[in-house]
Length: 157
Image 1 (tube, rainbow, N blue to C red):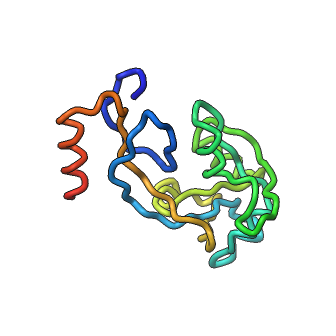
Image 2: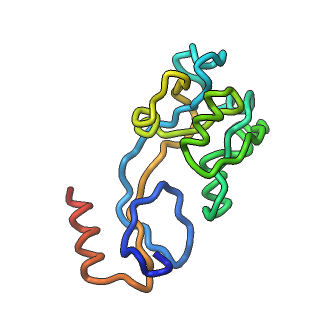
């Protein structure tokens, strides 16, 4: 968007940049913890957020801001326990391969877990974390009538 290559984007929240407008927020999804199929947590029907302190979380690297990366792989649980940092990856597929090899875990929303399901990875529901959301975003300086119309149509849908 900043290079002017796209007018709007649907992105995984949060978005905090002053030059970006957050429009319609949608696709509320509960969080899951991706662990190796043989991991002790894989057999459980769910875990609390404090369980994140038990294993390293795979972290995304790249151009995303630090606040966004921390939302996807927090450094501490809601109760203040330290969450160990896991290996760094550039793609979701790379992260899932490391999870399958029991080198760490990943937080993923339920729909992403369903879409990328694998036999060697278990997706365990996590209670006590905020849900995941997608949002429609556009650049503040390039808002147009078409941008507003698209945002209105999305909101109406």
